[in-house]
Image (tube, rainbow over all chains, first blue to last red; front, side, top):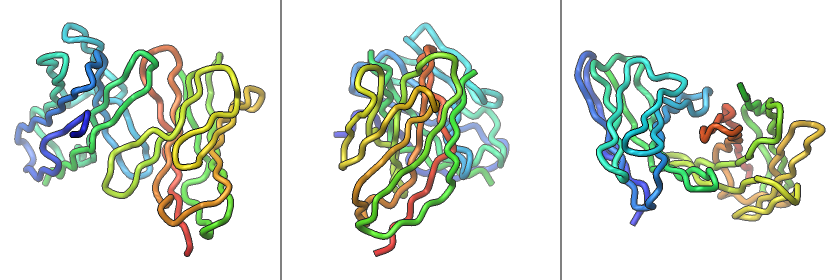
Length: 111
Length: 112
C-alpha cells in the first residue's frame, strides 16, 4: 500500500463550489505539505503543518484553507473554487532528514 | 529567500547517450539539495539527496549528482539513458526552514 494517499485522484467542479482534497499517510511523519503544480511553474507550496497544532501559510495560500485532523490526515479546501485553481495538487510528508515523500496527486479542474 | 534555477526547459537525448541536467541555487549557506523525477501522470519520486560530506552522491536508477559549492550547482548525471528515463526532473533546495523550493523542471525526451 502507498505511504501517502490522496483522494480524489481526479475532480471536476464548477466555479463557486466548495471542494476538499484529502491526504492520508502511514509513514508516521509529523510534517505534512500541500503543493500545487502548474505546467512550466514547478511546484509551489500552499500550506504546511509541523504537527496537528501548527499550521503555516506557504507561498500561495490565498483562496485555500487546510485542516490537520490528526497526525496522519491533512486536508486542503477550496472554499469557492475559481478556474485559475485548476491544477495538479500534491500532498507530501517529510521525515527527520527533511526528505519529502509525495502522494500520487489530485488533478482538479474548475469549470 | 532561496531560489532554484533549472536553465533547460526541455532536453532530448538518444537512448544510450549520457545525460546532464543542470541546477543552480541561490542561498547564502549550503542547503540540503534534492532531485526528484515525475513520470507522466505520476507523483514525484526522490532520486537522490545531498546533505553534507562527499559531494558526489549516488541515487536510484543509475543517477548521480555532484554538488559544487563554488558554482552553487547540483547537476544530475547519468552515463547511459534508457527510454524509461523519459520524464520531468525537478531540483529542489531546503534552506533551514523545512520547506522545499523547487525549480521549474526539465522535461527529458529520449529518442529510441
